[in-house]
Length: 493
Image (cartoon, rainbow, N blue to C red; front, side):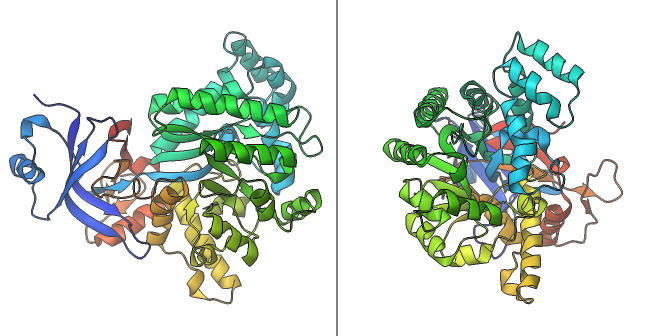
C-alpha cells in the first residue's frame, strides 16, 4: 500500500550550486519523510528515464512502486530550490509599497513604528496610532478594536497569516523574520509559521533607547529588553524543540535603537545559547553618522556590534552598503553574513551595495526583500533587482562589468547564498543526497494557450533561456507547488 512518507519527484531539476551557470538535470529524486525532515535519500539523473515506466525508475532508486507516491513536474516546467529570504519584516507587510519620498530615518517614524505598534495585543494602541497608518479611517480602526476585544491579536493574526501565505506562494521556503516589540504577537508569528510549515527564524524586535525610539514603542530599559527577548526565545523553542523548522533569532533592531548595555547583554545571550542574530548595518549615510555620534568610543558601526558581542558566525547584517575595508575585514573574520536588499535600497535611496566587493572579501551574501522598505515580498523580484542594481553600480564605476550580477548568480544568492546566511549551508539550496527537500515547482506558459501566466514559452527556447525568462517575467502565478521538508505547503489553485 502506497505511503506518503516516501515520495519520488520526477522531471527536470534546475539549480545553481555555483554562481556561474545553471545546473539543469533530468531524472528522479527519492525523498524520505520517515524521520520527519524530508531529506533527499537518492538522486538518479538520466535523460532517458520515463515516468510512465515507474517500475524502472523505482528500481534505479532502490524502492518498490507500492511503497512510494509519485510527483511529476509539468512538462513545461521544472523543480527549483525554495528561495531563502534573509531579511523581511513580517509586521510591515501591510505597508508594502508605501514609503512616499522618505529616506530611512523619517520612513521609520512616519510609517514603520506606528504600524508595528498597532499589532500589539492592546486595542488602545490601534485606536491611538492606527488612524495615522496608511490613511486608515476611524471606522476601520473601530472595527479592528471591536475584534480585538475578543481576540487581542486579531490584527497581528491577519497580518502574519497573510505574509506567510504570500511568501510561500512566491516560493519562499525559508524566511528570517523581524516581528515587533510585543512578545505575544511575536509568539503568534512562530505559531503560524510552524502550523503553515514554513522554515522560519522568528525575532522579537528589541528597542529601548529613550532618545532614539518613540515613547509609545520601546522597552523601559535593558532589563525589560533582555527579559522579553528570553521569553520569545523560549516560546519559539517550545513551538519547535528541534529548531529545524521554526527557531528564535536574537533581533536588536539596529545599534541606535538600544542602550549599549542592552546590545552587550543581547550579544551575551546569543553566545550563551548559541543563537542566530539579525540586525541592520550601514544602510544609510545619515544612519552611519548617527551611530558615530551615539557611540563615539567605537571606531565604526561594525565595531559597535563587535564590542557588544553581536558579531559572530550566526549573525545576519542587513544592507551593509557603506562599510569600509576595515569593517569588511572584521565581518569576515567573525564569519558574519550580509543580507543584500536591493529593492529597499533603491526605494529608500540608501545607495548601492557592492556585492562583488563583499564576495571578493570572502563574506557570505544572501538576498532579502526587506519588506516594507522593499515593495515586494518576492525573492524572485529581489533576484531581478540585484541584477539591475549591479548594472547601475557598474555604470557608476565607469562601465566596469566586473560589478555585474548575472541571472544565475542572482538565483545563487537567493538560494545557496541564503542558505549560508541562515546557517543551513549544504542543507538547503540544491538537489544533492542528504539535502532537505525545500523546493518549488515552476510552471511556464505556452504562448497562445489560455491562462498561460506571465511567461510565454514558444517552444524553440533553450532551457537556459526559459529559466532566464522566468526570472525576468515570472511571479507567483508560475509557482505551482511548494514543499518544505518534503511536505506540501502551498499549491496554486
